[in-house]
Image (cartoon, rainbow, N blue to C red; front, side):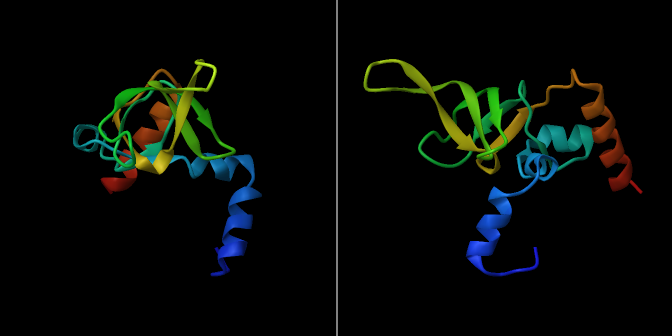
Length: 123
């Protein structure tokens, strides 16, 4: 980021390409994952188990149901509110405000990226 002006910082965030938006969706991981895989943070993915660390819903744990790269927020199963007509909608939480407690390792690309980061740390 070259500019320190807040307006330019926001413009950069809003106009970022998809591959950079995805990188902005990172969250810290639990101590168990740090010990096992040697990583401190990773991108949040659908299927990960997370715990809310900030805001009104502190302490809530659940699986990630949806990830919105446009807003940088995630929806967690079970964390809903009711609309005026009574229908439930997800409460969207910013990815930086959660801690990943269990990784979804069904994706081979994610496994390889974790191994790559682990090798980088242990050099």
